[in-house]
Image 1 (cartoon, one colour):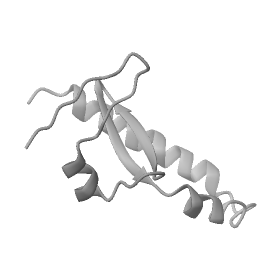
Image 2 (cartoon, one colour; image 1 turned 30 degrees about the horizontal axis):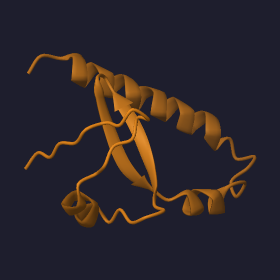
Image 3 (cartoon, helix red, strand yellow; image 1 turned 45 degrees about the horizontal axis):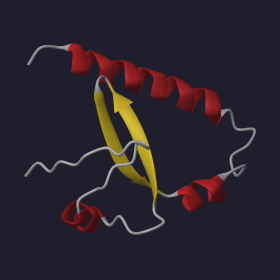
Length: 85
């Protein structure tokens, strides 16, 4: 069921309690904002888990491969959002 809210003058939004509970969003949880076309997605993110991996795979050349994969994924997502229903 859709939920709505109002943005404050500071750009703040309140995520309805039921959605926060269903998604496991607790005070202090880090979230990721992702824009796709004219839509905004909010996802939970684990900064600590990401930082634990920092430097672990240095020198393996994965960064270039990941960047290319992400570029292609983004291109596919944009094509999907632009195609008529």
